[in-house]
Image (cartoon, rainbow, N blue to C red; front, top):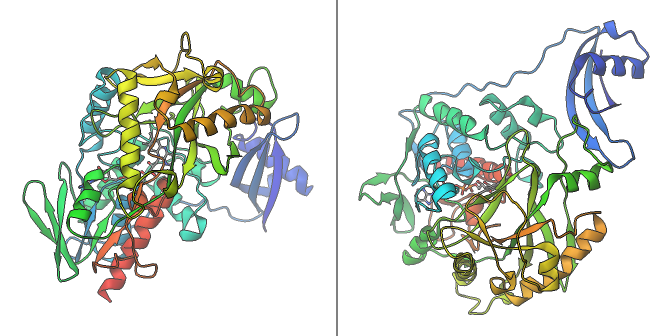
Length: 516
Ligand SMILES: Cc1cc2nc3c(=O)[nH]c(=O)nc-3n(C[C@H](O)[C@H](O)[C@H](O)COP(=O)(O)OP(=O)(O)OC[C@H]3O[C@@H](n4cnc5c(N)ncnc54)[C@H](O)[C@@H]3O)c2cc1C
């Protein structure tokens, strides 16, 4: 007999199979020896009561042969198959490539940045010397923005595709199977690079191609049909299907499309700051304790408030995390966050941003670059305010709300350094004021949140793409260019690793439909 039940256990017991079996046996009122296997299906922390517990949905094999699931995929050889060019090796591009292989197309990935290992040196230069390589940074290179991201894998876009399938592919390439059961799956920045390398090996072993240090500078289009791409080196590559998955930071790609008279549109996004607290403040508030139980993970929060008709919300919260310098050009500051798999840094950070609509920003609403120029302008202002070398402008939380320059700044995780600045010098008044109103309100929702021990670091500006590349809802192709598939976050169809991966898969399927 196979049975699914929910069991509740104490932190620490949640990974102990013997205890879980006992608890399950007692719930079913049977002898534990009758249980031949137990498989955790879902696992979540319930911190609503005074005592924090784990809720586990488990599948029990009772007097029944137990076959644990394994996650390997066999990919066919596509070396001589019909090619699909994929621009960008982020989650969208890589999952598009895997899908191409599964359906019998040969993926040719073109990536402007470097392979994971070489990329690491450029990240060290960013963090230690404040030097940004515009081709190799936190956003550009193998695995895209996903490689050195936080690796949180929860998404709201479950309707767009097979989320579990994407998670299983990660597991097949080395991620812990925990991501299949955790309510808030997380891989961690230290583990992602090996997984990305394993995906690369799968693509190459199946006969796909990956070209690093290769920037696409124009699309080859003939009478409304894409024919391939031209690289910065002058080399041309040919295919009748091109998936454009270049991410939200490839500003030159948007310029390229505009130059080639391929329609793009301005798109709303959100902008604000990254906020960092000592992790213990968040743990105390969420777990109602003085000191976190060592068997519980560092806690997270999710805050949202409507202020003057706009959403202000926390975004990409990283417990035990680090604030990362994610600029793609030398003269701008962009912050984001990541955490290692153990989430064992002493700080908790999140993007805290205000939704911006097209009409909020001055300029012609028909100008496709209106939002992008606004974003760039604020990032450059932040760079100037910090004084160079990626030093970021920052302010203590209560000082920010009270409009007071911070006398000093708390210790924080942002490696290039922070400088005390009144953030209203960087943020437009209408963003600044909404943030000022939202923070005390967040404090009323979460005890301890509103404190001068927290630091605001500017600016969190790459929350999503400021430009949309239109596509047909059914075929996923650009309305003006047959065979061109705008894909992933940069085109405006994804907002994270999982949704980008799913969009990559969907676009690859679109390429197959092109053949038939
Ligand atoms: C620090 C950080 C933390 C994050 N944490 C999370 C998280 O925890 N969970 C989550 O879901 N998301 C997270 N994200 C966001 C996530 O990484 C992105 O949503 C996702 O990577 C988007 O995937 P994509 O494939 O659409 O684009 P990208 O990952 O941006 O990939 C685009 C690729 O295209 C390449 N490219 C650009 N232009 C060209 C060109 N002209 N020629 C060739 N190649 C080109 C780029 O080099 C890049 O590799 C984080 C991002 C950052 C930076």
